[in-house]
Length: 267
Ligand code: SAH
Image (cartoon, rainbow, N blue to C red; front, side):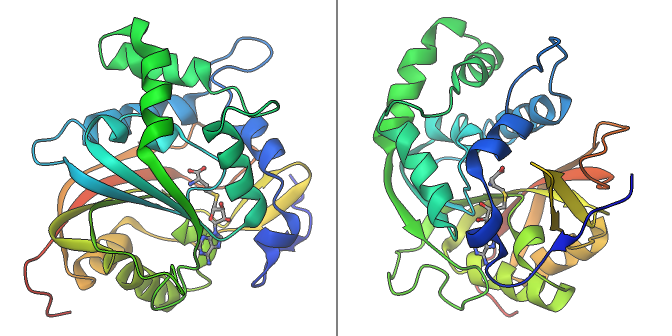
């Protein structure tokens, strides 16, 4: 495919990101011909595995770069009582709030919620899970991962867990910025707490709605080194191939990992 002009720059998300088109493109469980969304299913399964690990529980969780999505919180909300969701883009936070407040026109996550309930062994509890998640998300706030305090001017108390899916590779222009953003969001985690991430490997763009967004090209080892450099030890990781022959991106794999913050950070 001949790639159209790539959108880059500080405010590209605020200017160009259409949450409803993004959701339709990447977060329907199966397409109009009934083909399953392998990308989403893989990610739901990884999140289920990670949020079933021993020790991955606590009071507070912060979702960094939540976008307009909730799939990344469906297993997490069984393990953490209070959730704060952060994103840079106004329209993404607004779209998330529509679902949280059960407003007309909100994205229909039910098929995805039901799928996660099946993974968790009780397909009947989907309405209960939706209700639980709506109650557990206490705040939706603006953030910028390139800032030393991404939630400024708000000072958040360090949380038991930070989850972040497909945000840092979208927000960071080079490896130095990526390392620094990891330290910034790592500061949201209490010593002994966890960082859970989904991140694309070896990709330079993703596209939807006839727009192309740039993505930081990352190798697995560079991510692991940056995570360790931010004061964490990787406890679990898996790499899954991006479903083949997908013209919407050139990403090769998705890396999922859980890392635990060391008690004293010498980074
Ligand atoms: N977590 C969601 C959204 C990923 S899309 C998912 O898994 O699908 C990338 C997200 O990163 C967008 O919501 C965008 O608003 C956010 N983002 C881009 N630059 C950012 C920055 N500097 N700080 C925080 N979030 C940013």
